[in-house]
Image (tube, rainbow, N blue to C red; front, side, top):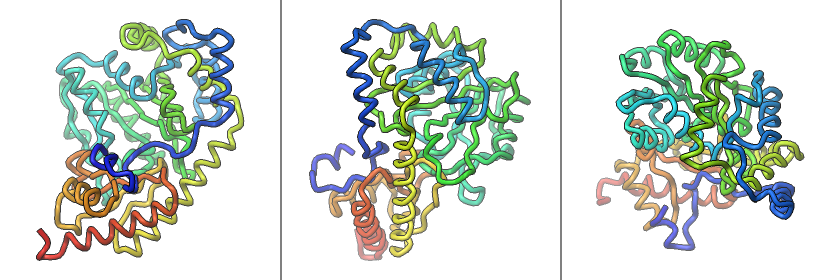
Length: 370
C-alpha cells in the first residue's frame, strides 16, 4: 500500500474500505449530537439507547435474542476482538485461527502473548473449516476458536451444517467460539447464518459486528460485541484502560445508521454484487481462476500461474502496471499463490485491473522473464 500510494495514477484494488460515503443522515446525527452537548464521557459499555437498538438489530436481522446488557459498544470491530481475547486468554493460552485470514487476528493474539494454531481453509472443501482439522489442533491450553463469516479475504460463508459442527466442537472441548461477522449484511445470497441463531444458551459464544463495512463508516470506529451475560461485566471493565469509551457523537451517528433508512445498505450491497459479477467475467476472460464470493466485498484470485510469489507479483504490479492488489501471502501461508481484489472500487477500475493483472501473470510466467 505504501508503495502504491506514491503514484497517483495507480489503480487501487488492495484496500478493504467502501468507496461509498457515510450516509448523510449519519453525518447529520453526529453534528447534531455535538451541537447538543453530547461531547462528554459515555458509559464504558456504550450509550443505553444504542445498546437497546443493537439488541433489537441482532434479534430482527441476525435471528437470535439478546438483552442490551449483552451488547458492548467498541472502538470498531478490531477493538471488540482485542478486548474479547484479552478477557478470555492468559499469556501462553492458545487460539485456533483460520488460514487464510485477516492478518489482525494473529497480530492481536501475538500482542496478548497467546499462541496460535491455524486451521486450513482450502478450495477442495469450499474454503470452510472442517472439524477433522480442528480436532488435530486442539490441545490442553486451547481456549478459543475464531471463525469469520463472510470471510475476509475469501468471501466464503459458513453454512448451517458446518456452523452446527463448529458449535458442537467448541462445546465438546469447552472452548470459546468467537464469530467475526462484521460483513453480516454484505451477502449476495441466502447462505449466511449467524452463529447465535443456532447456538445453545449455554454456549460460550461471542459475536463481533461493526458499522464500518455495512454502513460505510470505517473512520467512525464503532463496532460491538454480543457476549454471554457472565462475560459482559468483564468486557465492560476492560474497556476502561483501553479506550474508556467510544466517543458519544460517533455512537449517536451509529444509532442513526441503525434506525434510519436501510435502503442505503441494500444499495451498496447490490453495487458490490454487480461489480463481483463484472469482475468475475473479466477475470475469466483473462484466464485467471477466481473464487465466487458469497459475501464481503473481495474476490480471491489464483495467480499461481505467474510462477513467482504473490508478494513479488504484487510489487511488480505496482511498479510496472500501476495496479495495487493484496498479495495472498499477507493472509497466511495458504494464501500463497493468490491475490485479493477489492470490489470497493469503480467498475472501470475493476475491468482495467483485471486486464493488467492478466497481462502481468502471463508475462511473469514466460521462461525468459527474470
